Length: 147
Image 1 (cartoon, rainbow, N blue to C red):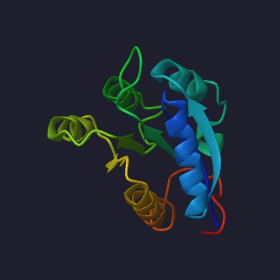
Image 2: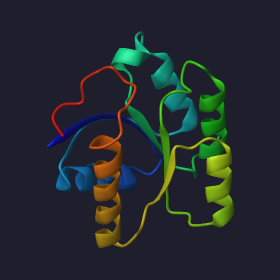
Image 3: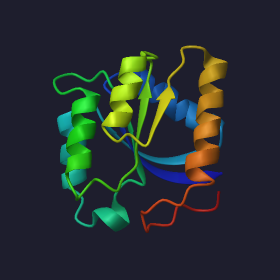
């Protein structure tokens, strides 16, 4: 099983539970921190004394958040040198080409479609695991475990 330290910024409790369950199904042992809006995500990141060693290896970010949306948060994260190195992966139901384009213009590391079809979502998470957790070298110095 692959171990990961992830910050999920998602306002929908049902989507948080779906993500947890799907990650377990594909063999990802999560240290999952959840923030239900952009401000809570920033507060969580700012609360970590040694972000490079104890912060998240990556951030999964929903676009449709209350108050400040995901694109606004993404731009804020990438503009701040303290957080800019953390990969931010958009995980959204939106397949709107404008949302995708804006996410990449705002320096998203990837854009994943959160399908309502269970089999498609499992396959998306499996591919996420294969690439982001099994292949990519993340800058977080905290060991992720044996993948």
